[in-house]
Image (cartoon, rainbow, N blue to C red; front, side):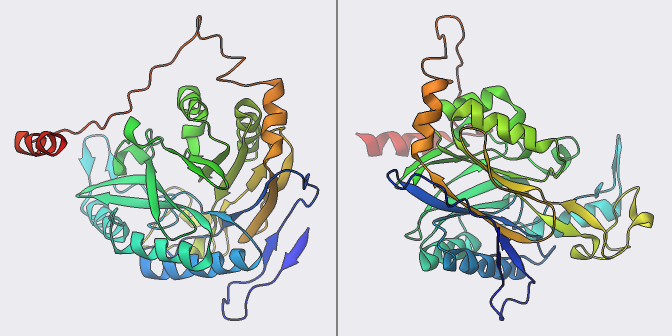
Length: 350
């Protein structure tokens, strides 16, 4: 493991980069980095500045692909209840949602333009976890950008977990993309979506080779899921999580960690990271890191995908489609459709 110190202008402390240099250099290789760092909560411009510092550091290290954690832009509201109980919402909770909504971003929008410019500036493929604002509904979303500074598309989390369902909407089958790029086929599933077998199967069927898993789960058992997905899908798995201390969130009473606030100090770790990179054979190439904010990197030998799928191709020679099959409804599920819009669309196709 190599210690990489930050640029003096970053003022963010040391970044640890772990790189497997034992790849077969007769096959294509991609240097990938997962960023383990905290949001600057309620301050989206400052968070974007921080993202650029980490992106510049990763690019300087030779990374071609950089993956950020779930909800990095907009923030993961860990510990918050938004004043919700069954049958009741509090004025303080409504105000908390207003502030959270204000910190989210529109897609497309100026923050997306800035992220695209960053990807182009540093010549990297960028996978970024954001809180997306669509009117007054929020989505936990992953955005994809290519190394030319182009926005490729997004994945919306289709199944928020537990109390997340109070603050986030549900994605649909129209945003489960896998993008074919010169560095491999990129896709993403967010946090506990990764435990949904049918969603994973849909991604495997689209040929995902570099499977990004931005998350908020820092438990050691999360590593078992990441290793299983790598083996099951015959793909590289890049899991990126935030590393947060209590002081990375606003102080009480402005922001309260429900049920545990009295036990926390400013330096208490509230999310321990655990970011990692796993190979298609199940080997841990880098991480898991529980030490602090970090850049965690590995060289991905893309030849390993074919070697792994020789043993097991989940949607190929191991699929038994005459016995088991899956139908994915991949059209948008819009609540309102305007006839005039539909007519204009039809006219353009004539």
